[in-house]
Image 1: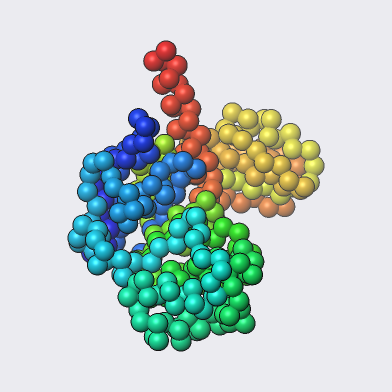
Image 2: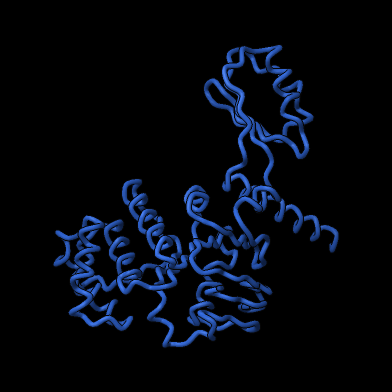
Length: 311
């Protein structure tokens, strides 16, 4: 079952297309990554899902219906622009957010306290929001997003400003929600976290969908092998193999090499062992970060070349 179905939506501002002919289906019980560079159209897409703004064309269904106010109690949304009332106390703030979603205050308070304990904020429950650090405020808003136990959780840059301990805590909670059959839409610039969490990915660049599918399918389509060589000696083999190397990252006693499409890493190894002492030779699949950079770079080059032709 698809929790969200989007069919050919477009949104334009002052003749600039923020989202163009975007379609995607998000199945129940998955973590679905909505990825892309700044200004690609991710947040605009999320706002259209929630009917905060309306598409100029196309349709969106959530839980099999056009989005309506009745469905909001089934959705938790953490916006990129955090929006807490700074002069409210933390517990009052959470009670207020729960009541907006239809949870009576008397039921919300004990649940809020459990989450405050879980996220190490219980001692701050009677503090005003503006007395908390930025990271603490973010955890409070995260609690407000999930307090009513939503079926669909939409997180726009949830890890921004998080230290490693709290980042791992949020990831654990996200995985728990997935384990309960909830659906999570995750928009983030942190490719490492997206790679660890997401089942499927929709990659948007310059308002258009570039890829929509599983992480494995993405790696098969765009991935090129990375080779790590740890060695001692002068790396003359890199010059000898420049025809099959796309780029090289240098570190203290090893290099990370991005191979060209179709290149044979065995050739690289054969040249290396003739010229240096090889301690480690490892072929690694590309990271989501590598693929992100590759897609954006290729798209930028293609668009610039097209512009030159048109001129």
